[in-house]
Image (cartoon, rainbow over all chains, first blue to last red; front, side, top):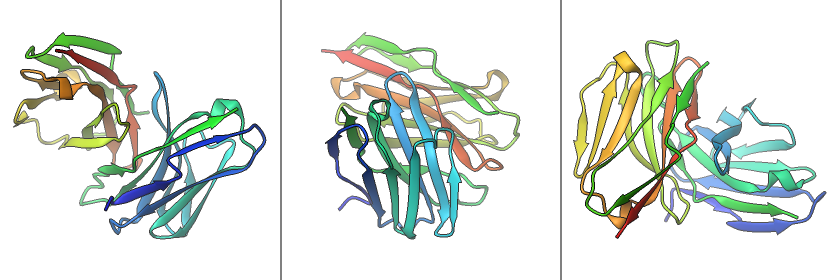
Length: 115
Length: 114
């Protein structure tokens, strides 16, 4: 079984709808992240969480919110989806070793289309 | 601020050719980590390698090799005798412990033609 899972894998929705993307991990990592990938822009960080009580904004958090329900679960919500949020979304986890190496392990991605 | 530049947007090579993917980074920190990830057409992101700033030894893993040069702030990735299965987007990334976040480059799309 995959260590990091994302649901749904694909979603098509309409402008203005509320959408939740879910991420679960069995790696036992404390740190979890949400990224979006757009062609030519690489991966950009939306939110990250270093433990259940710690939530931090990334570089493009506007229009998104997150919830860290447990160590293993980190959800991303689009309160009112808009077309420019059409992208591939990745969840990732990491566990800092000595020196905070932050090797990140990614889920399979969720392809979201907002019409 | 940390920055990762992958100037090569797309590269096409014929199978069995060698190819080098360039990565140049910027950081103010003396302690940092560099990574390469592979994203095949199926879309998942696969971790390939992590290198810390104190270890400038080149690394070889099968047909893959990495050249880390602090003097030029580069961490280049070479695939020897490329194969069609190497076709993917490759991302270079930088992590600074003090910031505790990872910055990704924009990726290089490699197409290996049979």
